[in-house]
Length: 134
Image (cartoon, rainbow, N blue to C red; front, top):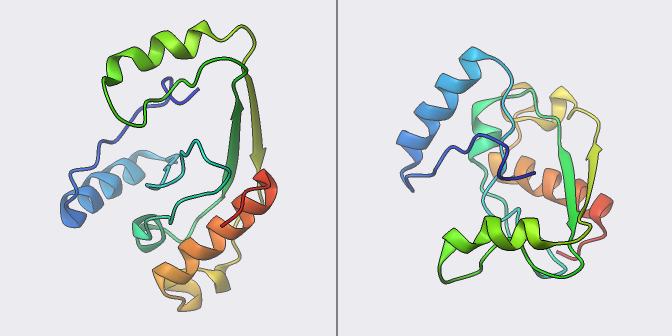
């Protein structure tokens, strides 16, 4: 599933990344996977708060990929093997849960929350659905 989605590659420059994401938001809805949302361990890594700074219309989506034989992402090493191992799984399962849109009072612009608090809240509700420890 993650290879089907259009990827916005991070430049590790907040200004460049923010400009690119704002441009895409002008065209319509955007699925944004913050850094730290893919992990092989039973926990979520810290979410980048950039998404919370760019929009108050935030609908968390929890995606859980269950792979029974091979991991389709490389922690380190040669990334070009990822699609090969991803499709080699005999029966991968994708569980996608659309959560409630964040109320305006839980956003940066509408509720005056810090982007870090918003990101932590989204991480907490997503992790709760996925059964992850954080």
